[in-house]
Image (cartoon, rainbow, N blue to C red):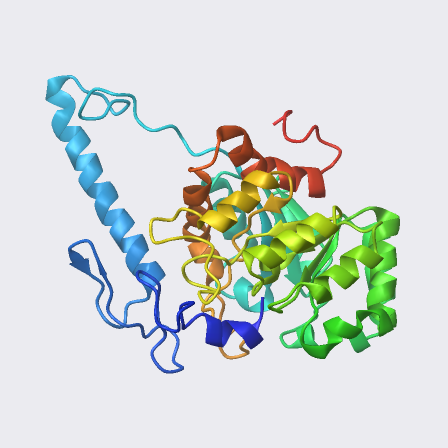
Length: 372
């Protein structure tokens, strides 16, 4: 993701006002949010929403542990709740199909810490783009059984708006796919007028041909309220497997349906469609359940959706040279959002969306997750 849509859309709800339980940026300074009430506790001003939620989770966990200990004399074990019922099951393994490991994330999160975060959150497959591309290999070396690196086209912050003019990129990508462990190319930002003229770009056409030859996905990012730019790409390149980041970011459910109907070679990635980002285009209600039109889409196309954390933070100053990106510290919150809405789906569809579809896309040599 990047700044062109985020700065505006993260601040306003779909009706132009801040949505309940969603952070509203005060002015342009990151981290300064309005006070929000959740239940009976109030978040102090100046404390980031994610940090506050993490502190709340820790507080509640401490209360739960204390309560369980107090039940010990009654003969109730940690495997039972106060009513004597079995405790909730461990969360199912998940695939995070949209992750970055960038130069300004490595400043605060080491490869070892990132790999530990994946394991702690039961991530079975993690699709990682590096900036520069080699950063993804650092995570791959730490967790080769989990990490699937895809070749990142960007060398530094800001490259997302100029990559299509870099002719050397095609040779770099070819070398990476032929001689490295990379299993795709992305995230490529097709923004502004460029997406409408994609077929005039020798670089993009060469990259599409390259991914088709290697039979690996391409992750693209568009930001349009109508489907035509995306349709023109996926319909004209039927041999490509295309993943649309953030389900088009600004696409309505009706426009998403148009794309899914017309392009069997395209998958929707729901990363960053959470309460903290793209809040002008929500997919869930305040209880965490998908809105009816979005839930209908997932039920109608259960094999065409994947999820991801897109663990970047703060969201309003992406790729800032003077600020570290702490997104990996919040990966659990992002993934918990997806686990929450998926919990309302039938079990077979939930497993597809949270795990199996991403395995089919990025590790097709496995038996669609059944061997995991």
